[in-house]
Image (cartoon, rainbow, N blue to C red; front, side):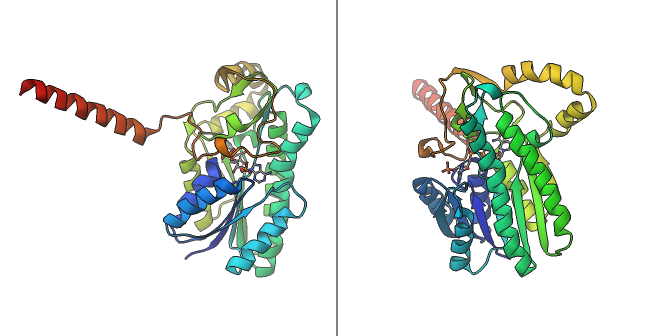
Amino acid sequence: MSRTVVITGATSGIGRAVARELAGRGDRLVLAARSPATLAEVRDECRAAGAAVLVVPVDVTAPGAVAGLADAAEAEFGGIDVWVHTAAVMAYGRFDEVPAEAFEQVVRTDLLAAAEAARVALRRFRAASAGTLILVGSVLGHITAPYMSGYVAAKWGLQGLARALQQEARETPGVRICLVNPGSVDTPVYRQAANYLGRIGRPPPPITTPERVARAIAHCVDRPRREVSVGRLNLFMRFGFTVLPGMYDVLVGPLMRLAGLSRQPVGPHEGILFTPNPLGEAARGGWLPDLPRVVRSVGGATAAAGSAVLRRLR
Ligand SMILES: NC(=O)c1ccc[n+]([C@@H]2O[C@H](COP(=O)([O-])OP(=O)(O)OC[C@H]3O[C@@H](n4cnc5c(N)ncnc54)[C@H](OP(=O)(O)O)[C@@H]3O)[C@@H](O)[C@H]2O)c1
């Protein structure tokens, strides 16, 4: 059965992978983010896969913007069946060195805009007695790490919000709320993040692909679940954080500096907190090898070497 699905954060990373995943299934897609040029690129990719697509350039932190997005979706497709909210930003730095407006923009985008999306979507779903809201949280909604305080605060807030909404939704059969919590994912979010720390962030291993998270989200579209964790170490980290908090706190700083920060230096900048950077947007972040490309280059090099040997033998 095809559905109308609104996807925020559709120009990059997980949101873009979700758009591609759902495009091939005949769903009607409403793609939203701030960059009109990248939205047009993703629209073309999804149309090529057979989907009907509407793009709506929108800043989810602007007053009334999310309601405008819902109105545009309903005007085009007559209703909304699923809302997938992935839009988010990050800022690296010690809490006291991150400008207050940067911290607040992270919370505004990652928590308050998600709450606004939930409000707008749930009002419509409740009126229709049907609909699925999928919020994208993080394993950092269950554990903490230094130098990401705004993001951690927002994701813990989102965790609590999702749970409270799930409890309220028990009164409205047909309305479902899912929280998808990825671990480390190979997306552009780390390089696009604001930075007041001096070193570019990176996803600590094990790193998963945005396509894997997108499949988990697509699965929730078909079979909504309360919470889905994507990442091999998520449960292990939650266990350490909860059961051995003292040891966790001793280890997390050194581990973050070793595995969660690259060696690349960077001056203070506000990343995409307030304005998008279309040049940095893609499905993948470049932290994992692009296997098809590796296979192509190894195949090409082997073929070239083989024909050189044959020429010599002849
Ligand atoms: N990557 C990871 O390792 C990881 C791990 C755990 C959880 N997550 C979560 O997964 C979700 C997606 O992250 P990602 O890694 O895919 O990030 P990403 O590649 O940086 O994509 C973020 C998306 O959000 C959009 N966005 C940012 N601010 C916006 C605003 N004010 N209004 C509208 N759109 C906005 C961006 O588009 P524009 O800039 O064009 O607006 C972009 O499409 C987030 O909720 C993130 O917290 C990611």
